Length: 264
Ligand code: PEP
Image (cartoon, rainbow, N blue to C red; front, side, top):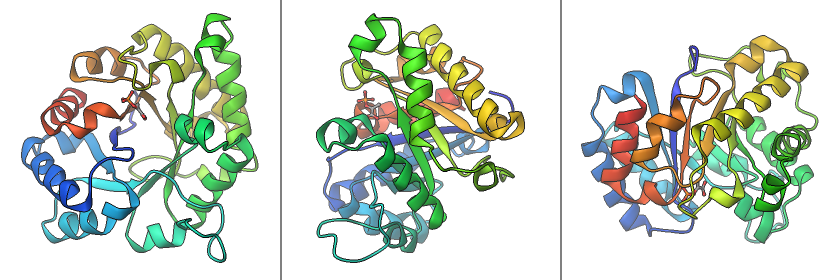
């Protein structure tokens, strides 16, 4: 949509060792035509254990692929066994980090307050949080998906100021929103283009109410949930949809490269 640069982000979830990660990124760099990068940004989100290898490969070979992490701690350092801080991710030159993915909300009981704190932690370290929201099947069936997602967005961005996300750079605001209906994640049941646009449009309208129309226009909003090459063009046709967060299909270099080609 508008002047926003398309973003295709591959969420690898808990897949691939660092050696396998190197293989996939090399294959991707080979499969995504250089011209794609003029209009689209391609990013991979490996597990923590692969980030250093991906960084070395991407910077060493100057590959036109960005990378980031799938989660971070709300804290910057200290006695938080097993956690990884925004500062650690920034030291690995991560550009992005997903926060509030539905799998973390469901399996790790992350509520909106935690998600908002994680978004703030990312911003403190100059990392763009990809803030995920999305309704479950029960909410969708009750027809309450728009109200649910806009209020989840509000609560997930609690405390965020227009100053923090205003201004923008060539790639827009330093925050990305991902609409990921839970019923579409990993199910093979992609939302229709109309359903995806309905919610993404409502999310942008909510951002405009809260932060002003200019800032809202600079925030990229992604759709995620069973995106494949075959569904990419339809989804990205939505005027408020600026890219895709791709799970399963991002582990297949050919399929992911095809999604990137279609998105460009
Ligand atoms: C995701 O987990 O962010 C996702 C969109 O997964 P999938 O594409 O596999 O539905």
